[in-house]
Image (tube, rainbow over all chains, first blue to last red; front, side, top):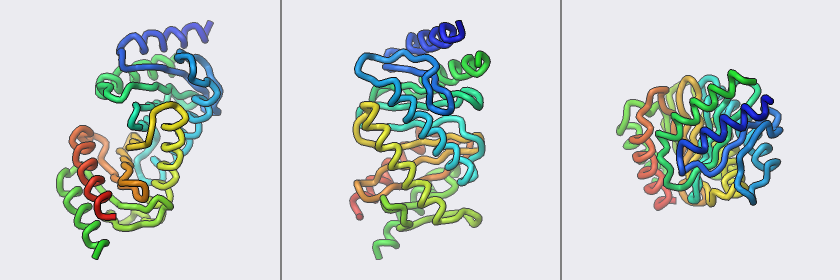
Length: 120
Length: 120
């Protein structure tokens, strides 16, 4: 039931922009809670990578005086990974295309992370 | 001599925006090459954190099909850390204020990273 509601948040999110290729909600220890991924992408890999990045990002944010972690954006030459805290226990990860309109994606992902936080 | 030129790149960069609080050029193994930091920020800490983040970011970018790493942005509730590859051997790290105009900072940092890449 809760998983269906989380999947529905992801489905809404992926629908907001053709630039979003995949999305997933992951517990802070790296386990998948819900995901909408294209075939060829490994759930476990996204989970483990997101949890590791959030953990290091959180430490960097604290150590360099930037406060509590909100988001980590990784830009590669073939696209973006955007990881957003959804409360203390989960992270929302999104894969986006290289020329994605980041401003819109930040906004839509922030909303989806807020909906996720309320649900879990 | 080279260090003076790197410091001059940082000085120009910090001058482009009042939102930029600090900047540093760090070798890919985490050693400081040049920096303009406010007092209270530890050089070694910025170096180590930037190198760790670039290393993990690079792995995530590859593993999730995003190609070669270009940038990592960490957003905390008290500001941003933006790390940008400057060639294979260095990273340009910038600390910015919470309400920084990200579009402008991305642009200015990209230019500074390109100038750094040419120099080292």
